[in-house]
Amino acid sequence: SVLLYQKPNRDICQSGTSLKIQCVADSQVVSMFWYQQFQEQSLMLMATANEGSEATYESGFTKDKFPISRPNLTFSTLTVNNARPGDSSIYFCSSRTGVSAETLYFGSGTRLTVL
Amino acid sequence: GQQVQQSPASLVLQEGENAELQCNFSTSLNSMQWFYQRPGGSLVSLFYNPSGTKHSGRLTSTTVIKERRSSLHISSSQTTDSGTYLCALERKSNYQLIWGSGTKLIIKP
Image (cartoon, rainbow over all chains, first blue to last red; front, side, top):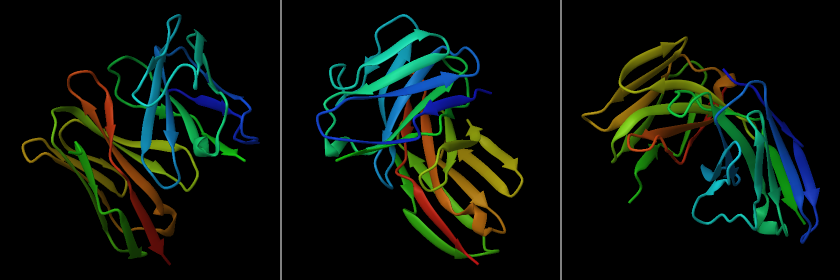
């Protein structure tokens, strides 16, 4: 299994500012994923981050708005640039131990409120 | 159309009753994964079930590929089972996950 430590747990920021969310795994993982979840809704995959390469973004998410870094096999950061109230949601990092490994593990989530 | 349809959207039961949650899918899958999420909390994997039936305590997951459905059964529900249950289909072609819309389960004492 993999334990993912995510911080901060919650944040409140003003519109137009940027904030960074960190995710640390307790063991090396090939891929890290970032998800967005609006209140009481399903998860949306934002991007997939592999070590040493540019993140792959899903439709509706861009590198300029949500830059992701993956400097090593245990760490990733998601930045929310030029935050807007519509970005208010919960952000999760997740990972699996291998490309086709079974279980997906999740961090505790970061609840973001943009004023 | 939606490749994974989860039902019901919400379910309210009395403690002790059984809960049946379902996901129907329209695309080829490697597996169906079931997750539990407390309100505002993280997700915990309950089952990774490519086919057949799996058990874990009071929980049972059944995936029937021919019928394009996967179910999660909770027997003798408890108030602590309350939360949101999500299914996620792992696509056969690229291992990508396609998420259901979730079932909000409320167990009343």
